[in-house]
Length: 322
Ligand code: AVI
Image: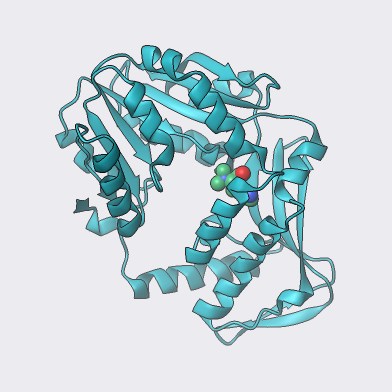
């Protein structure tokens, strides 16, 4: 396993970046926090709980859609492909896909966590012993983390980006991310990417305000993390979880609402909260097929095919780098 060292900052650098981002986000007129900080160890575990929650239909729908269409997807990808998975996590979803491919050349997972990658690599070796794995530790949004890919021989490269993760990037950043993918592919190489689709706002809001309150714990864990890691004194009982669909922006927004006027100290710096003031913690964009095709084109891809579930709730798209 080779680490892209330049893109894996040390603990001290991580802490100071976290503090800088938190003070910057809470210092503006509209308070925000970058959603990447939701995923510390507990946050990642809570996210796994969200994926299994009854009201969060996304994971379930994607899993079924993938397994229902594996043969067609494998035919579209074709033989001798190297599968690249940015933000691979536990590699659970890719296994069935690799197994369905005609003579796959190997698997190239990328993740910020070396432990997660090590476990995933072991899992692939156990379940698919003939598959070569090249792991890359680092933040896949950083171009340098992709550099080692050019040393891997392959006839065709395919980026696999499931989970509707593209939806957390926002209009500009999602196009930039697709451009980064395209820059690391050759003409005709593939992108298999999953998106949640625009739908009834009641269904969307229930997914992010689930009846088991897991998403609320996930959202509030961000304040716990700031308390723990940045010597802050957020009182969690003074914040409420709110998630609502914004139809014009086609996104669910997740916020933490201050229930009364109060001050919070973060590393000795005072931050004031008015009653009703919110911290915007995450945006989850939803797409129409034509809207996402336009984004693919902007990012340097030609849309080839897509598959939707029967209720047209979710989509898997296959596109080719231009
Ligand atoms: C990771 N991502 C695709 C999730 C989503 O649905 O946008 C994150 C999430 N936030 C709250 N619930 C799920």
